[in-house]
Amino acid sequence: MVQRAGVAKGTFYLYFKDKYDLVDQIVVHKCLDALKTDWRLLVEKRDAAPMVFTEQVVFLVSCFVDSMEKDRELLALVNRNLLISVKGMLAPDNLDLVPMLDELRESYTQRGHSHQEAVQTLYLIADLVVSVCCNAIVYQQPFSMQEMQPILFASVKKLLN
Image (tube, rainbow, N blue to C red):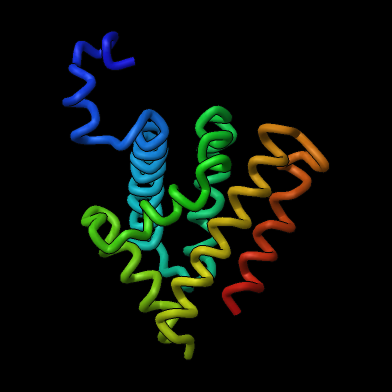
């Protein structure tokens, strides 16, 4: 792999522990790009018409589902590397997402929940959404994404209430 990239093996390991760490970082990077795009769409939609917190989260979930339906290979990687992906996206040093995550956490805590509950709920939603998408989109079982989408959105809403 490093030979094809024209990089010395020693240089490669300055940036990544091994080839698996490289895959993890690529998955996190691609997820962050998608999430930033989805966030921009949400901001535009919110600017056009006010949205309650639950509607905003469901909108982001819907955008994620749409993205994953278009990129099944990425979805399979995200599913395989879920913990790494979510930890990477929620990392406090991820400066691109800090304002978005702060806003989501603040919106949730304003509804009477602790900061810890906000972070745990965001993780739970991410895990649920990725698992359902992977089964429905990549493996196409036990149900199609079309069948699961209304139930997924209703479940996300319940988690937020």
